[in-house]
Image (cartoon, rainbow over all chains, first blue to last red; front, side):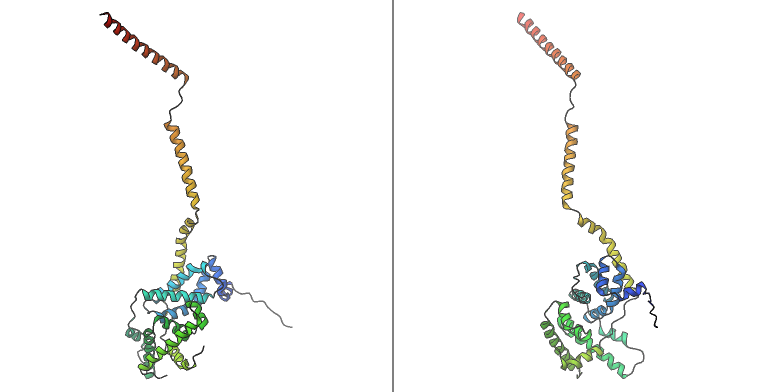
Length: 195
Length: 113
């Protein structure tokens, strides 16, 4: 004989399991704690996208800008769309605005200094060198190509979703990805990296 | 559309991507506080925007009517009572008679001379 015991689920645990859609509904009704959960779910990826598209100096401010815009825009959010797609589009808009504002790029040397450990072996040095190359290669691309490459190859967002985020046809995503990869490969080869 | 020839490139990019810097301590609370603040500051504009513009015109018309009524009541002369009318009539009669009487006497005297 087996006894089934119903284990009560704590309210906060239940909320952790809520879908984005449910949380969005609760946010629209004014529940800011649901928005906190959405933030925790998506902030890391939003942060990564912004970091690859902008410089690190203003990263926290940009992340805040994205989530503030999202909160204000929630009443207009169409429930048919995915929340993450909509959020990444906001992130892309914030990155575009930041870029147009003419923000200065961060000095790569400073970035390297931050990440260099005190004791390192040759492999670490090569890894840091490659990191610098990837970062410089991304900066070498146009903003449109860079965006597609970051979303697809680094964040592994499907092409269809990228098309929705950028509001462009899937064919354009493929074309930009092709050219972005070609330019990146060319840059790396010029720097002595054979793939 | 897959780009199999670019798999090594994508793999290289993922492997050597610059790690994302961690968020500043308290960023989450800072964002939530900003959201609460934006809510508080949104209350007044939202209520204002919901006001019906017709209410303003109706109010303006009502205020105009009240102002007109008050000015009519204060600026128009008060009705004259019967006693005042009779006093006014006797005043005019006396004055008229005096005027006529004096004039006629003078004329009479002057012509007599």
